[in-house]
Image 1 (cartoon, rainbow, N blue to C red):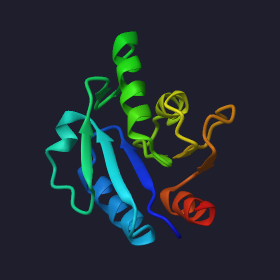
Image 2: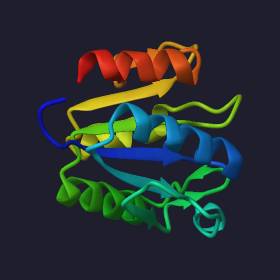
Image 3: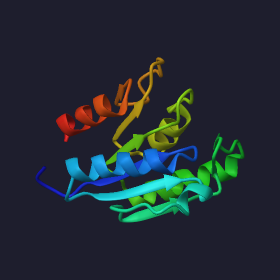
Image 4: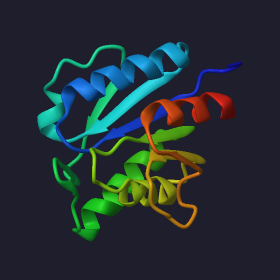
Amino acid sequence: MLHEQKILVIQPGNDAEALRSRIKTVRSRFPNSQIVVLCAASLSRAEIAQVNQVLVHCTMSETGLSDVPERLLSLIELLKIEQFDLAIVLPDENRSPYPFAYVCYFAEIPVRIGISCEFGGGVLSQCGTNFEELIDCVQGAA
């Protein structure tokens, strides 16, 4: 990788151990990148090493995104201002990455990847069925 990228990792749910493991992998693959985690308030209290910043927003909860339009617009604006190069959406099992992918799409994040087995209409730039497959796709695209 020739330049430092700004990577947004979105972790809905409350699995702190999975987040730590995934961040460790992202950091090892992209050592010079700025990594920012967007998560629910309960997960933000977990010890998360190797990240540059943890964002908590009132739109996020352990169960997903709020459906309050003002909150969603506020999150979109925040992410747009941050100017991320890449978003990685890592939902818990049986949760769709697509609500978060749409937020990233509207925030104009150019590369949006996520774990999914379902069709999402192209809102994810790339998707994989597991984290390892997904991170290999990201590294190949970088």
